[in-house]
Image (cartoon, rainbow, N blue to C red; front, side):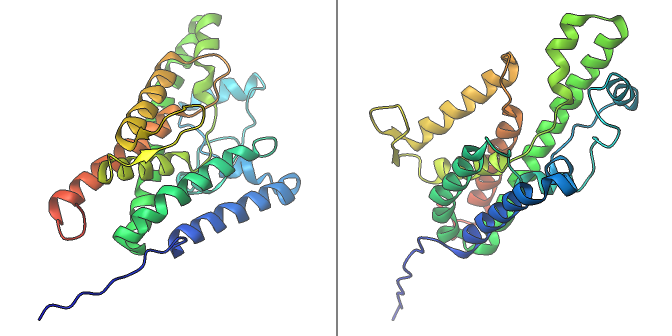
Length: 247
């Protein structure tokens, strides 16, 4: 005789809850201790760049000598967010993590979801660092030939990134893959949109934003894309190798 047990999904499962708590605690530390310890600057993901370019930027006053990539930043940037007035940065990320992450954690369990989340964050960091390094190479060339237009176009390659958005985009990509026809209500859109189309739309916006480099846009679009691509590939692999756990 087969046995069936119903497990009620948790509205606030432990991994999602603890990830949100960690992010909020780090944000509180940024607010309270920033002046003494420059936490935000230390936790940001600074770009990899040629040493010659770093020296040029320090000499021109654009960077301080300490503002450079450190390996630990591939983790810490995922748990830090823009300080005030950027409160909506952490608010939006944590709400999205709760909304979609709790579903995935209830399906997969805590250990698998935590692994997935961290791998997506690392994938986001990897693509972001790769694209920033490419832009830094262009920036160094622009400095060499003293092309001010090219310098202005590529100076963003020397800026850091922070936030959970890359990992959260991976969570959204996995949700859209597993539950593609779930209807979502998105701000400013007066009708429901299926998860698969919403995710494709967000990816298209990030691809356009990353390629177009619109002036004043301070979003790390390739970090978003890196997280989404990593999440999609990982859930695709798990789905093909473990049919009992996924769909």
